Image 1 (cartoon, helix red, strand yellow):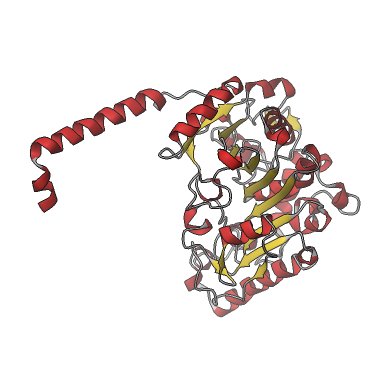
Image 2 (cartoon, one colour):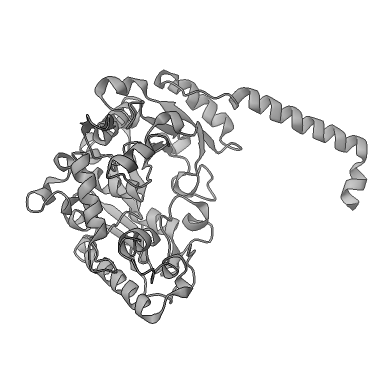
Length: 418
């Protein structure tokens, strides 16, 4: 109050009017944002540098040219991406982020998604915030803040891996074509001369980063450093609380409906069925490009949707526990410890490769690289090293990172969400 009195009423009004004027000017420039065409790229690069210091909202690009290639969202609309161009020493380095957001496996769930951003670019936000590993702030994202950072939007509901048209549903499942069209466009606008590339993704996008890791490596210069980060994408073929395999059944529907099989790694499909090859645990040992697996050992999505979905928990025994770890009884905690043990076992061979990286913490979380708080703002830590530092050390070869946490509840650095 004393400070307000010193400023004085007249001066305060002046500052308020100036603030309003600035907001009006900003709205005039960006309030009625339309989807940009790819031929506006050079202008966007210039605008991005001017706004970098203050504006973290990154505009959308609708890739209309992809439609001719059959690369479309589920409802037939064009695919889209958001690009915040690099600066200085980061001009020839790229973070390519594959958006996540679950899957759909039948007529009802797929039709529902066409009315959302996960099935149609018509429903996508025209500006989104880039935070965590996508941030342009050096303090938040020390190793990658000056790189070209691009988020490819997710509107196929099959981890960018399907290629089908369902005549009965009138729905397109063209994730593989979207991947190909957007990546080719990025190559055309500069990524073809990249020196450093990191393919990332969270959840369904984390699975996609694994599926497409070697594909991206093959498209880039041999001299480029190309690596992949899967965050919250280590989905396990686990037994649920009823003794069934809920996620396997679900994935089987996704793979069949969206004709995913031809786009799965041959190093897996040459000896396993397609549904098995949609599970990362059966893929990671055959990927040649270096991968970093960032995952919570008690992945809350998998607890809620794979281990204890309502269909498996008919008695409702898990209804409270799966949303509140403090409410879990000893038997339930033992079951969750078994899930952690399965995850640790799944990465045993993978971890033997010096080029791969691991950060598996004993947290109740899902996706930890895209939010500042879990990426580098007092993030969870293993071996006294946070997530951003761990990923950076691995990518640049500053240190080998193979960190697996002790079982819950030993980790006091977690940002638990249940």
